[in-house]
Image 1 (cartoon, rainbow, N blue to C red):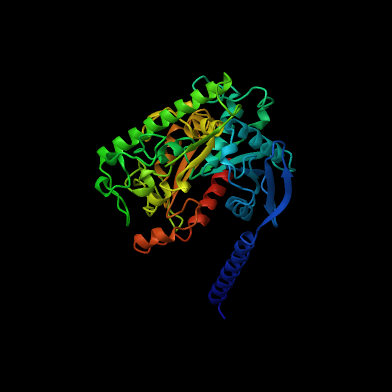
Image 2 (image 1 turned 90 degrees about the vertical axis):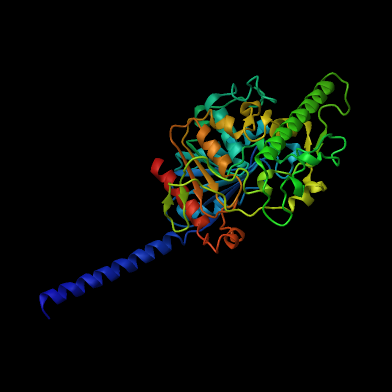
Amino acid sequence: MDDEVLMYRRRRLFSTFFVLISAVFVSQAFAQTAVMKQFSQFSGGAQGLYWVPSSGPISHTAFLVIHRTSDYLSQTSTQELPKRGFSVLGMASRFKGNEAAVNWELLALDVRAGVRFLRNQPGITKVILLGPSEGGAVTSYYQAVAENGLAFCQAPSKLTRCSSSQLAGFTPADKADGIVVMDSTLGSVSPLQSLNGSVQSENQPEHTSANLDPFSVRNGFNPDGDSVYAADFVKRYTDAQSRRMNNLIDTALKTVTDIESGKHFPSGDDAFVIYRGSAELADLSTGVLCCTLSPRKLLKNNGTIDSSQIITTVRVSEPAGREEDASFDGARNFTLTSFLSSAAVRSTNSLDGIDWCSSNASTVCAVENISAPILVMTAQGHNLIRDGETIFEMAKSIDKDYVAIEGATHGFAGCTACSAIHGGANYSNARLNAFNYVRDWVNARF
């Protein structure tokens, strides 16, 4: 056998060996699973589950994930991020499952307890706040308070303000090192955009204005699919949503004043129920808040990034919302405190006339006051694409990034219903791509 043939066979053998070793390494890396290491009961009622990788080294960067009322003890990120070498504290706030109990400002105490827990774990030097959905508003509010002090949540512009005695004791170490918001809502703006703008009287919510009815075929509603509303109707409807919200705020504030002066029973707080609060145009029509305004990064299913185009939603409309809005399921059950602190915001138009800093639960107002690096991620198969772009645009952070995940649902699974109406498009890698992007973004900075 001559030397040239021998060299060729050796090269092939080495190449095959290298491929096998690489395959073993990759399979081992993704063979990691999440292991629940510790349960914690925090002061005030919040809870936490600390998740770590089942094997291998643990990153010095840890995540904290939380929502306003949803139980995030075992949220998707607590299972996905440990596969990539990170530890995660999944949290349930003190208001878990009880929207009527929410006192927004106190959520900062729950997040702070979680941050301090993580900073006390061996080997952890960096803490990243992770805010999926409403968690984006919670985590950004916390970071704004941690970076700016109580002046942020006590500003005269706010409908409700934090208490110096309750939120005392913040230290520089309480600031997170970065923040990731995943398909985040705009916080208190979401209840505004969900109000049925055709309601003329809160005492008779069953009586609506015909020319403002979003469920009227004459106005563009399609009971069998995607609704198409004229620009004039969208403007009139979203103006009406703002008028209704402003009236609700005025009513709530007057009741609070009456309670304080002894003119209202019961004292202390009271129920505040809003009927017909499930009529968001973006749920009914893919033409409303459909897209980014500028070309943005779209992480495609094959793992490549396309930054050349406007990103448009691929979601499926939900005309069944008509039945929900007219039922008790369409009602929002607040107290005066939970409404004013977490669901009320002043505006002149629900889409483009928001007084962002009238609410401590405003994601945009919070990110306008945050300097930490921020990653804004949205799901192409949902209706928060433009909301995410707004958060990105308004963020003060110099180090900020925006990316949309092709075909992802609100929970970042691949949207099968979306695929069905878009020619069988493959969105199967949505969740894998999303959390790989989070991994790479964090590793590049911390």
